[in-house]
Length: 356
Ligand SMILES: [Cu+2]
Image 1 (spheres, helix red, strand yellow):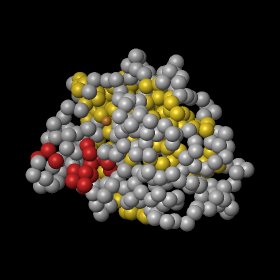
Image 2 (cartoon, rainbow, N blue to C red):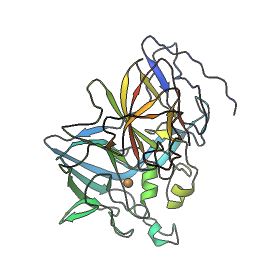
Image 3 (tube, rainbow, N blue to C red):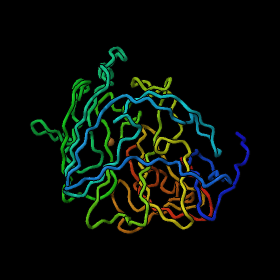
Image 4 (tube, protein in one colour):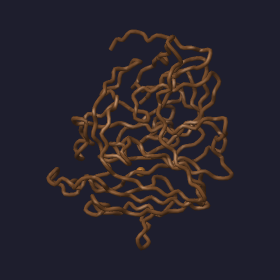
């Protein structure tokens, strides 16, 4: 598709904006869309952050429907700005939001989550396979945490992924979770999402997920009060009339282009020379993502919470397919995976592309 070249009217005196969209197999010279009318707005929304206090983080997590308007593209547009449109959606969510809060915990902290299922009754007859007829039942998994995946003490669940489709937390029920981050845990980026067989695909692809950051007093992560840390969920929604009602919708309806924290081609604004620390999480159900930021290098320092011992792995156009997407730790971000990268803004606006 031929599109007119974007305007390059960025106010470089104060801000540099990076158009942050995605495209398949294209090298783009996109720009941040700065305007002489005023400073460029950063349009990447950050998930809410909740931190433990006095070694405890306690919260309710409501599984419920959320109605919201999302600006999405149904097909990847190789240009910037790509064509997108507003779509009214009604999707399962945590706490009524696309993207649940990021939970920040120290080693030794306790996380308590009361999972409350406020979804409506299950709809029978969606499939001849009975395990696909429980789309409104749910449960909770803590992805990557070094905890027992079937822990249960009387009345309290830890991580728990061994429910059958007919069990789990049914509409109208709740489940109290409690787990403590072990002292031997590695710091890093993890996430939580439903893991009930048969329904987790529709629920996760609808936006029922949140990040967990585990910190360590001897932190090997790149953290500094001077460096902004951002959690970026890389995700696609699959919509049929704005909804993902059944397993077949989540697996078969047209998938959107990649969204970053729920937005198509959001703009990240940084000062020239500014360094930021980004955690990219692939929370899509099926789709690998291979990030390349035009003419810039993402300096990866951890994958899936495993720090490369102060060695940086360069992710750029030249290295994007270096590992054939086969060999760990290649650059491709498969569903569930996380890259932690630092990025330094230059004077060149850039456009992130997906090289797969
Ligand atoms: Cu998982």
